[in-house]
Length: 415
Image (cartoon, rainbow, N blue to C red; front, side, top):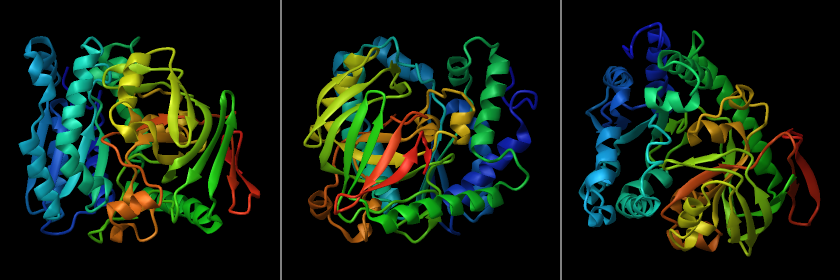
């Protein structure tokens, strides 16, 4: 199979995706360096993005590739002590690049079930070591110090998981078309389409910021959850301005508006409405109970062992770092496809995220110290894992400081 065969992956739409990643996702400035991470299968898209980046005046484009076969070789043959190690030197270099104002672009597309047969304990140890090593670079991203973006490529191993009943060529083609539609590059002028979409998301986030809710109350089957919002929280969605002054779209696609919960003010129970694909494991039917902001009880019908290991990553892993609102009628939800990829699946449903908060989701967040963010209710953790809690059966009320309630969502749609 030839991955750039027009019958499989439309070359015109792939070129539009590369253009959109640079012109909408990153909005690279002349002279700015770019660091790309990508699965090796995404080489056709990497080449197109690199070309567009240099056309936009990029100083230097550097790409780091991952390879599924090499990753699996580690789990099959590496000595036990290998799983407590990570390439800290690499992440230190990335952090130094970001400190020098390099932009960051990640291409998503790994097989979501790649590590399904690996030892969960080794996967957890490797993830923890990697998270600790990655922290200096991740902080530059989560603090929104730089412009960054994520787009996706229809890796055949991913396509086979999403469409297991189709021949590989058909699965790749169908996944590619779904990615292109969700990324708004299935139209002649994706840059204009994104400008219109960003304006719509800005209207939603501005309305929420004007309301200044102190909490959100989610109700639905198995869900009765009150999410207190952090002090001086700020809602964002679509295009945002990074601390380096560049306005970018971090996620392509995106349908969400999101903010920071208060790490100590989450109470009640909540059930997942879609499976979570995490490091090769499908975690389904998640049910958790919060007390004082902390998950005190958790179970899942599938993948529970992995869920519990995630929750034990560190103290902040059992608390929330994000709450996001997405209408059930979003294009990704309407597609009916379970992408097994958080970048897409989180944009099909309202969701919450365990772990690290985003400092940009505070008024004047760029000027706040970590202690000030913590004092306002922001959570800190090595992880940030989104999982879906919205559906057409979920209602959301905004609760104001005086206790009055305002309808925000009804039956999964904006009220």
